[in-house]
Image (cartoon, rainbow, N blue to C red; front, side, top):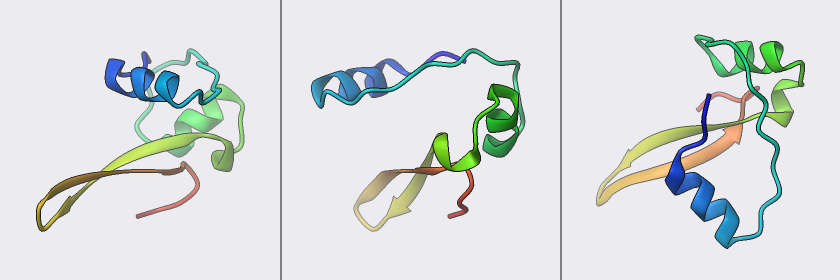
Length: 66
């Protein structure tokens, strides 16, 4: 899966180091971690949360639930 351009730009602007690991399509972030052969706490997933004034983007480990 490709990384979103906006996320890629944000990471570049903040000098965040990361690795892209290609994998087959999956139905959950934990299955993605399995497909990539990494622990769930080493894979980040983005969750959009609706708040009073709009939306927030929370980035959490794949092993966590929100």
